[in-house]
Image (cartoon, rainbow, N blue to C red; front, side):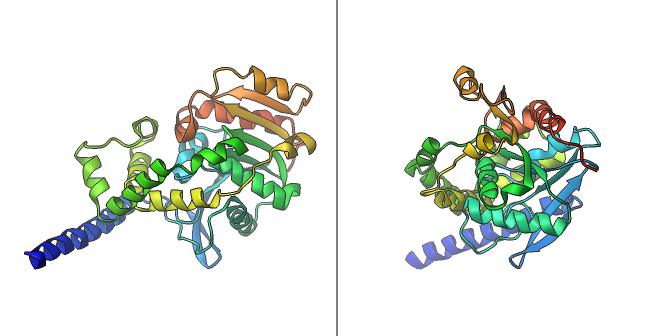
Amino acid sequence: LIQWVVLVVFIVVFGGYLYENVQVDRVETNNRKTSRVATVDESKIYYNVTGQNGYTVILESNSGYGSVEWSNVTKKSPKDMKFLYYDRSGYGRSEKIDKQRTPEQEAKELHTLIQKSQYKAPYVFVGNEYGSLIVDAYNKLYGDEIAGVVLINPIENAELETLDKIKEISSLMGQKVLGSIGMMRIAENLGIINLDEEIVYGLSKSNAELYKNFRVNSKYPTMKLKEMKGLKGYKSDYSWIHEGKKEAVILKSSDDLSEDREKVKDFSHIEIAKIEENGTSAVINDWEAVLNAIENVISRLPNVD
């Protein structure tokens, strides 16, 4: 009986593993998009550039999400607005880099990618939630390259302590195991679970398929767990925006922004504005607010060729 149980478990696990990999390849092949690729730390990192002229706007995604997060922002932007957006190591088609996932390390990798893209500084950075921490780390390392920023619900020091929750980690670890053998995909296909419907709703059919393909795969919880682990002891400090007088718009989903606006009332180069939603859904569904914020920052910067 034990031998039969072991055999059945082996067949289920091995079969599920094969099924998941076949489905991942199928979805990616059917929805393949033209991308550029750069080698960073001996790994292939995929990125895209759209638009032309002016400042290059670097888009940095939230934890657990790839460049598909920015699909509406880049698709509906003016043609003279230039974007560089990419999948971080381990996201989308990008290969993993065997180094600790911390905002500092990811900022270094981003710097290498930007250099290989051959687009020149200074840049305008847009960071969504976790992405704001990478922008913060990038400033500590290469602050002279940043002309202006848009931060979307930026994570503050006090919030970092709440990210390391046992319940969330346990859930992600369970998703990692189930995702590797196709069980998350099967459950989603059968309607047993509905993952991020508010995000999927705002995407095109092709991008929705790519998003769900990544969301049910083990890569999603794997990368999110690694980035959560890398936040231990990290201190975000956005005072450089105030002190360095970098043009900035900070988008927040809070109903009451009076306290935030009071803090920056003496800084004419900083504006606090409202965005309707949190997380990735904010960027996908409230793309107009993001574009307005970027245009606001660029309009206050010196003209560049």
